[in-house]
Length: 222
Image (cartoon, rainbow, N blue to C red):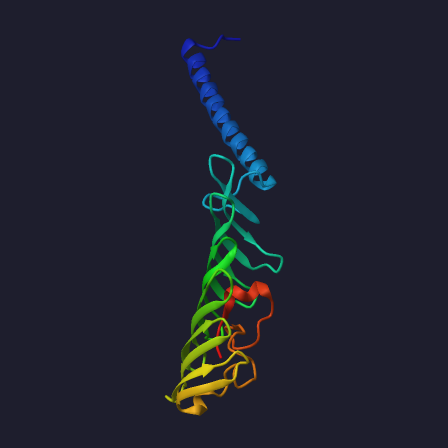
């Protein structure tokens, strides 16, 4: 039996080295693929550009909560900003009925509120600290609009109805119109016509307030 020549041995070694390199590369690729499958499949890593959580909390260097983004018990989202002492300053909400509101707070009480409803109503409210005075502007779905001012038990309202009629009304502490200028018919459909005094608060849809918590989405109208 003849011994292989040196040239044949070299050719054989080169072939084995090529096969070895191919197997090593394939092993590395398979190893990375397996690791990626395990990590991604187990949920340890989320896709790039996506962060999933039910609540985000932002704290300052002292550990004080300054903002949070979360969902309420009914699933509606809320973004709230807090002052240095932890009191709420600004709140952006989308309620369960798709009403959106932007509220500004002072010492825990709503002072300014802007809201709109999917039905087409829009309201802007201003409230004082002790709840004795307030002013507001509204636009109802039928295009009627108006402004209201209240101080204590007295209130003044001006409304322009959808048909163009208008009236300036003055109400007493019982919500009864004591004087007015303009078309009396334009008062119809407001809280005064329903026997509810001007010191009451109404939702952006024109109904009665549902709770104290809805104050940020209500408007003072006659």
